Amino acid sequence: MRSVYAVIVLLIFAGIASAQNDPALSKGEALFNANCAKCHGVKGVGTDKGPPLVHRIYHPNHHADLSFRWAIERGVRAHHWGFGDMPKVEGVKTPEEVELIIRYVRSIQKEAGIF
Image (cartoon, rainbow, N blue to C red):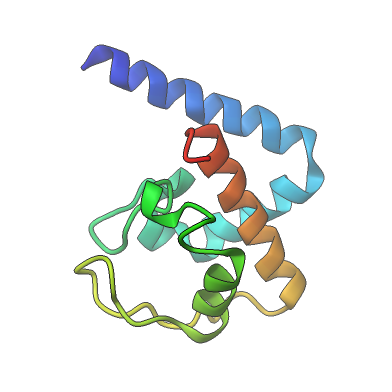
């Protein structure tokens, strides 16, 4: 169990370091934290309100970037998890902000070994 916590801590610090080196990732992380983390958790690990995005079900071959784009812009019906439908994300105003969030999510998925 201790090693699991160590890996989580390493992933968090690795994500902080990579986001600090890339301004776009930093912006995407800030947008994610402001608009998505309340349900999907910090670093996309999930909460009791929403599923983890750092999960193999969200691999790009199963959920392409377009799926994330539509979920943010339009909302999405529940289909993999029992959390209920996801509403449109009201705090994300521009297509550029959507893309920054997607880029950030893909970066944390990659760090976690999803792809």
